[in-house]
Image (cartoon, rainbow over all chains, first blue to last red; front, side):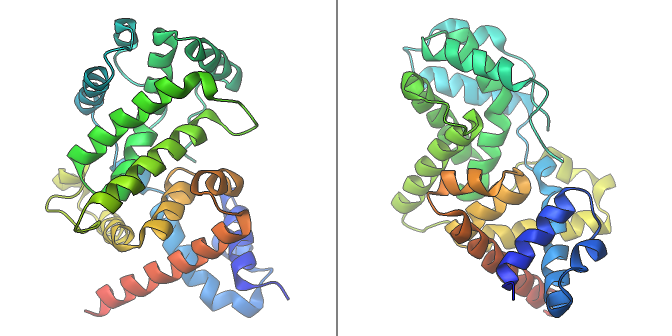
Length: 88
Length: 188
């Protein structure tokens, strides 16, 4: 029998690929109640990424701090300043 | 799903190659691509805006100094950065006498102060965030890497220096702990 640790990991991957909670749980009726509670908690965590995101001014403060810490970094490091190109 | 995939892997590889031969402009672009994730990751570990800023800067400084030693062994560049961030944050926490206790005004998220966002979902998320901050370092680290940073198990394992199986066990324990904490809060 699959352990609950593995069942949880599998369900999380299934949901990560777009399945809903009930579909993910179908394979593990023996753990259904426990897994449902854990998956619900996990689903609340994902949106947190957007909540703790440094503002542009804070990103610039970090950049300035970095230049302060590392005077050997070429000042051209500053040339790419502005909005980060990544998501968030 | 949160992924920093606006640039192709090849673009990033080129930037890493340039940065590893001391191209500061390329390193600046890598900084822009990853600073948010590094900051967020550290913030969730140290739970302090000013300390997270400082440690984020230190992370990139260490990365700059070690760029020529970075080797692409199938592990994304951001995983390497997060490993540096992890080590710095853990070392910082060890040196902090009081450990990772909660600070006043602990969250750096301007949008959270917006009254329009005071909806049930946000309240619930705030509770989850508070609960995450109360987890032990190891469990908190795995939860953030897996669910906030959306990394694969093998990437998390690489960063925290554990096996994939161990990461899955920690993940299970952490979610159980969070569930219990949230149940207690609901009752209390």
